[in-house]
Amino acid sequence: MASVNKLLAEKLLEELGGSDNIHSFTSCMTRLRVTPNNEELVNKDAIKKMDGVLGFVEEETLQIILGPGKVTKVAEEFGLLIDSNSDGVDLKEKAKRKKTELNKKNATPFKLFLRKISSIFIPLIPALVASGLITGITKGLIQAGWMAADSQIAIILSVIGGGLFAYLGVLVGINAAKEFGGSPALGGLAGILIINPAVAGITLFGNALLPGRGGLVGILLAAIFIALVEKKVRQYVPAAIDIIVTPTVALLITGIVTYFVFMPVGGLISDGITKGLLAVLDYGGVVAGFVLGAAFLPLVVTGLHQGLTPIHLELINSIGDDPLLPILAMGGAGQVGAAFAIFMKTKKKRLKRAIGGALPSGILGIGEPLIFGVTLPLGRPFITACLGAGIGGAFQAHFHIATVAVGVSGLPLSFLIHKGVFLYLMGVLIAYIAGFIFTYLFGFKDEMAGEFD
Image 1: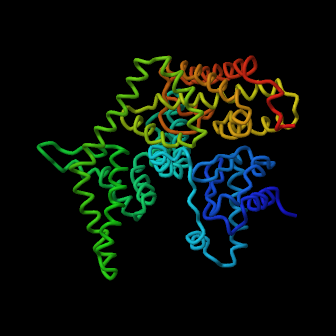
Image 2: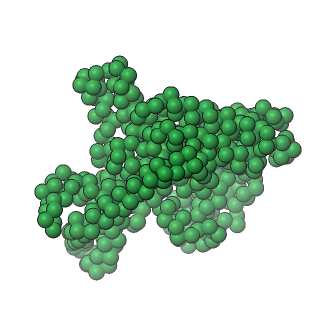
Image 3: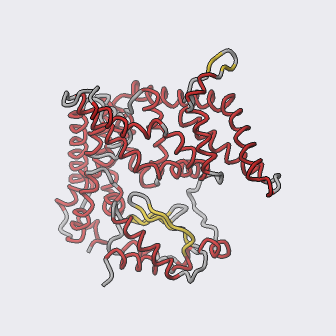
């Protein structure tokens, strides 16, 4: 008997137009992302109404919201079905002949650029979450006096949790070069050019270079540049000597440009981002916190929220903590409060089941099932959830709550709070309550949920 996940994968593949219509697919924490050859063959309405599908987003890929954990299992079954139906034909080669252009109204250059940046950092999220949690819990135990900072167990845990952040530039360089059509190994070298401690021995214009200057911005510039140089050089180099000449020339040119241009320019950009955000929070105070908290859920809807990851990391790299993440984390908390309100008011059993299935993920910081399965389809509750998130964001901004690492929002983020864990949790509770009140009083009537009959 076929598993539930396999049955869902079969239904999805059928409504997506079959194996021959799949150009490529991938999955992230909650979404199955599919690029079809011909979008006209996709039955979008059927997919939206399918049991097990929490939401459906149309961008340059079709994004099917399945929820954390489940998406991995369904994606695995989906891939097996495609392989078994492909008759040995390379789907990518077939797609080159069949693929049609997918015209998207909102595919502006700025959004496309942010999605490129998101694609660089999305694969790193599991590593960032794991390292961040270990680092945060270790620091929390030390601050609470339950573990000596110089004890062997504290040192071991710190090394395990902090290793990623010491060499993050290499992984970012690898992904950036890959995303822009270059060799991943050369992208890794671009990251090493900046974080290498030996950089301190280089003196330019009378000033010694500082290892890591330019941060992730400089690394992104260098990795993208080396990918572009590699492709350009390859056009003029005979195939027989390509393996020798192309990477050597690309690395040499990139290295020189990095030390003369990318490190100082990246440093200026990084300083501008850091100082600008801190100024907004310092001078804007609770108003800035409200606006940032309320605006985060619309970013999640578009999938552009992952593009903020380098900003979070740059804040941690520059000032040692991140005051932005706790504010944005209130987006999920406002959503949870709104979902509780709908659950209390509705008499529709199907809607109650949808909320019950998505709430645990929302409380643990994965808000997409609630967004795409509940509040966004209903309309007004999405707005009241944003208002609740804004109240929580204002609270976090007022008390200057900050994290020591990047991780998922919700309750798990409390392990990453530098100081004021209790205040952070109070802010989460406030966002829950505000989202609940706004939605219960103004955001939901049962007749709005006709599609859940």
